[in-house]
Length: 178
Image (tube, rainbow, N blue to C red):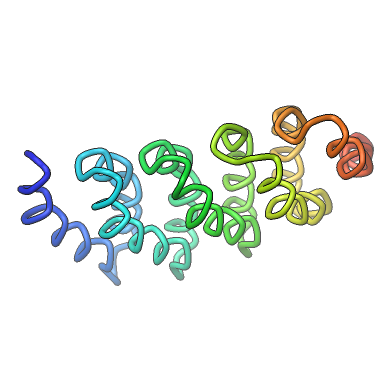
């Protein structure tokens, strides 16, 4: 299947299935397929056809669909590249860290470890640092545990001075956490 065939045959079916209102499992499968479809279509066509599906799924009423977005976000970022991660997918990640379901927030936090390459320290500081402070006091134990697990790579990505001034209190709070 080449790019033109995919655009003509696969994309319309993909978009239609991703909007299936009765079957969460179909919308979940569309998130699993999203990175492969972007690889097939190329970044620009993927941005035009697949990215809107991902954006919609990140707001889906079914928490399992939102969890699927969070779970596959790393692969989506790899498929789209740093430019789209730095803009559109970063918004999705921040939104998922604020989700009402603990499992979605945990899965979103686990993606932080994969952000050091596509995002600059400034972008992390600007967009994720406020979320880190909030997530450090999250009611869900699994969210705080996930945050503690990605703390090291985040400190590395931010650099010593920023990490020391902005994350030291959070680090000590996580150490005190049972």
